Length: 156
Image (spheres, rainbow, N blue to C red):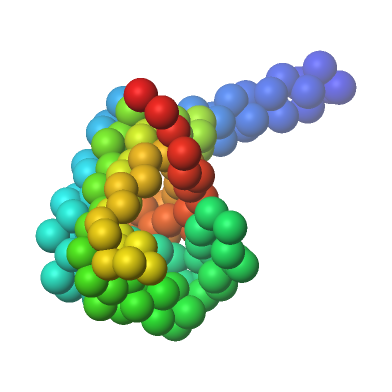
C-alpha cells in the first residue's frame, strides 16, 4: 500500500514537472538582445525621451558614474530630458553578451558604451566605458531594464 502511495506521488510530481512550460533560452536571449539594441538605437537618435525612458521598468534604478542613484521612472525621465537637452550630448552602446536565467524571467546584458557631451568650455568630450544592465520580463511579455550601471574611462 505504501509503495503505491509513493509511486502515485512520484507520478504526479513527474506530470507536474513535465507540464511546466519549457523556456527557449536561445529565443529569450535573442529577444533581450534585440530589446537592448532597440534601446541603444533610440538613445543614439537622441530625439524621443519617452521612447528612451520606456525601456526602464517603473521601479528601475540608474547608477551613473560619480553621481547619486536615480530611482524610479519620473526621476529617470528628468535625467534623460536633461541629458538630451545638453549641448553636444550623444549616447550609444554595443551589446557584447546576453544572459537569461533558466526560467526566462531575468537577464543581463554587458557591453561597451560611449557618451559625448560638452565640457565647461564647450568643447565636446567623449567618454568610453562599459555597462551592465539587469532586465526583468514583465507580465506584458516585454523586457524592462531594472538596474542600469556604467563606468567611464575605458581605453582602447
